[in-house]
Length: 95
Image 1 (spheres, rainbow, N blue to C red):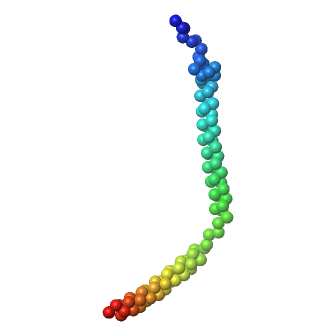
Image 2: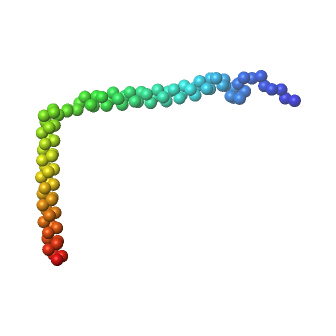
Image 3: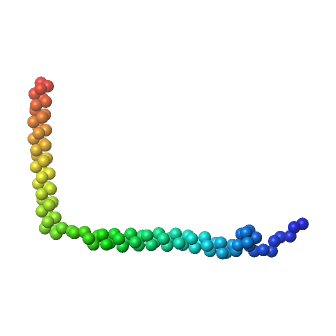
């Protein structure tokens, strides 16, 4: 009959199981640390880019909004007139 091994590291090919587990935990921690470093770098770069942005004054924003609303209403009226005329022409042709 064979005797049971007294070696604590037999299943780990002569490496300490605790040492192997610590190395695996260490590589996982390095990955996490890398993700955190990348995230911090991204936030810093984003903040730097955001500081370069020029925001319009409220007065300029109001003027631009008024121009957009007026042009939109004029285009809507123009397209309404064109549609009305086109419908009349088609009805005249079909009747």
